[in-house]
Image (cartoon, rainbow, N blue to C red; front, side, top):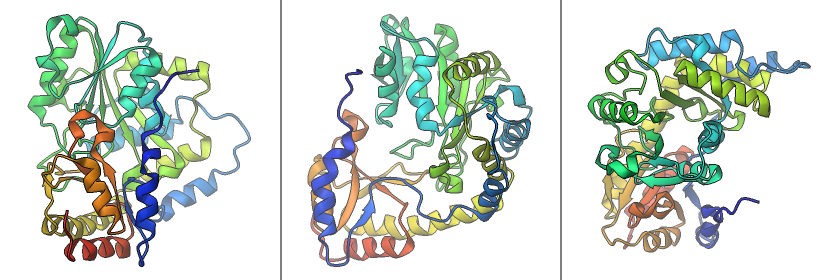
Length: 370
């Protein structure tokens, strides 16, 4: 049995209960789960592929892999991606959690992740028996540490901060990884939700990779842009050698995206209209929530892209802020769930229906004292 820490969100139970006691009900802005309808074009593709008596292909259908390569060229500025270097995954979280193990990492190996980061990066290292190390700038790690770094996670736009890394920053990380023989895995799941960022470059962008995808993996999920969290529809693309190895391991382990979901993901990636429409829904919600938080005394930091507002009241106490908001019937994510550097911050999700977003804004603009 793996000796893993308790799931952190269980600690939110008393705050959820307090928020639910609000006369107008709770507004849950803690978990970034989509609440809007799954697009009809996706549901139709799922239905049409529902008769699937045989085993699906682990590598994904040719149509799905072509849709991914076309999407990279059209939406991410990465033309010419080889469909063979694409691999569907059962959501992106399982890939994040199992990548160190599938790469063969273990005791003595180091996995680097951002200082404020999605906790599954750490869990993936722990599951493999490797050591997670927090560093926003891996180039500043000492040479003794770098000798053991085998995997560097990049997350841009970041969860929970919404920070976006520019081309120069990403290229510097790629140069370092190639010097020390490490893999760079770039979690780009929020790339289609830019607000204040001029651009959100991919790790596979030729300005970053210098035209060579060796050692590089771009990880993506359709959960956010297409409201497909319940489908577990994601993919990874990049280095052909790494993809071949991961494909073989996933074949051995039976890690296969169901055939109807492959068809649904293909349809989602081939249709930009629903993504544009959903982005505007989130934009409106952000334009309601951000000024309301600021009016309540919070400072919004970074948050230039993605589904969250990264906030602080300046007190330095995350749980004080979580508690105060729960008394107003608002549930938020504690910054401490994302690493020690998240102390003093909260994460506020844009994933609630418009009526609930408006209710939260009204409560924040009321006689609110943090």
